Image (cartoon, rainbow, N blue to C red; front, side, top):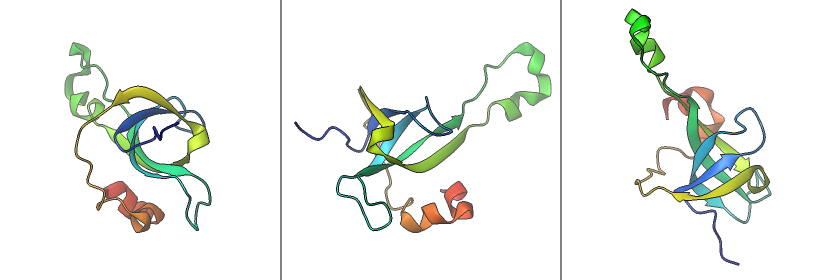
Amino acid sequence: MGKFMKPGKVVLVLAGCYSGCKVIIMKNIDDGTSDHPYSHARVAGIDHYPRKVTAAMGKKIAKMSKIKSFVKVYNYNHLMPTRYSVDIPLDKTVINRDVLRDPALKCKA
C-alpha cells in the first residue's frame, strides 16, 4: 500500500480541541523524530472561520470577518484522510521546529 499522507492532502482531525476541523498537511514524518517517536504530520488549519455578513452587523463586520489559524503536530492515528488535496505552494521554511516551540513565533507564522 502506498503512502497517502502527503503534503497538500486535506485531512480531518479526530482528537483534541480541533477535532472535526479540516486541516492541510504541511510536512509528513513517517519514521518519527527524537521529540515525537511516532509517525506524525505538521498540519495547518482554520480555528475560527469568518461569519456570514448581514445587515444587522453594522460596524462589527471587520471583527466578524477575521480568520484565526492554527499550526500543530498530530499523530497519524488522530487524522483521517479525505480524497481531496490542494495544489497551493506551501512555504515550509516559515514553519519549522523552533517556531512550533515558541508561542509568540507560532502565532506570527
